[in-house]
Image (cartoon, rainbow, N blue to C red; front, top):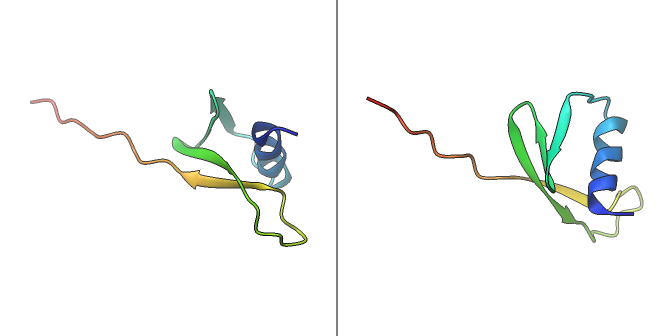
Length: 62
């Protein structure tokens, strides 16, 4: 199973329906998360880690 499929399953299992993917980046409530494989070995681990992506710089127009 791909990381994207695992992330989709994780988000839906948490009851979140308002999300999308921008290529391989998960977007929830305007916050972007990169997907990474998790190898912690915990019995309940789903094998995917969501890492918050750095925000886009905000430019102030004057």
